[in-house]
Image 1 (cartoon, rainbow, N blue to C red):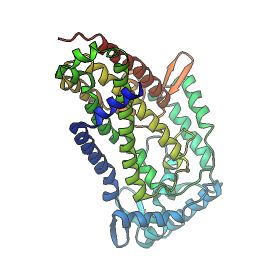
Image 2: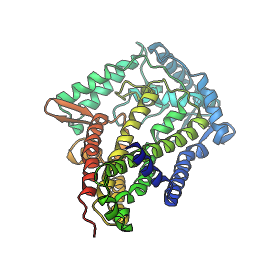
Image 3: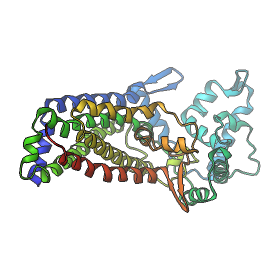
Length: 410
């Protein structure tokens, strides 16, 4: 059996079309994941600083911000910002809001603006966008409880009528959030921030893999070799299984190469610093008790399951269609139409189905509180996607082999 799998695997990778498609896909992946490096920019008093030099400046600034976000530290930080706003010489006004200018901004705000914005957003109402200047009017005469404010915000999110969460779903999220460790450790996480916002770009790799495996069965029909293969001793048993296993092996290895190339580009440029920092420093209301590395690995697990299910669908269609092109006419819309179907919320059957499509499943949405309930059972988006794509894979992969076995050669 292993010899047959090896033969079918080599049959796939030795095709010129496979090499061309994979080379093109890797290039596209490298370009997309390289863009955040090339386009990165930060600012100092001299103007815009781009690319690797800008990244180096930001990392140097963050080196001084590797701190535990205790309530005492938060209160002192807010007080420092308020002191800067007390001097009229430091303050500008654009007709809508006040902001700091000149040295007050460049020395007191710019090096830690992302941290200050995160603190300010923690105290804001859900879905309200604020920046560091919101801290100027905050009452801290009795101190400030950063983590109680976080809990209040999470409760407001859970009780938002537009989310339509049941009491069981609310309890599910409260229980998950109770596992989040506080106070948060803050620090630099630039590389991981890029990765968690770019997962959906791997859809092009999944499409390329599906294009490569589309002819696994239908290519035999097209070439007229199906009659010979199906009449052979193991044509309807071991060979069929070997084709499915070889396709899966190729798909998993190909995606791994894409992921390795993409992550290597990003982490080489931005560094791997911050892998052990909590997701909450990129959004305090995130309920998942994971650090950045754990979040990336869990989302990658979902992406591999999406890939395996899509290989299953491709093989299922390949076993029933006479041309690989007909297979792709179905696969391409399945993969990419959901890209244009934007959810209009997190509740309702339409939205919850959209979140389970292949493209949307590549977008983690760590802070969206997307959950699914069946009776007393509640699953978050990660678990639900896992269940859906495991079921699809377990159904489609055996059916694809059965379709080839039952094929009647012309």
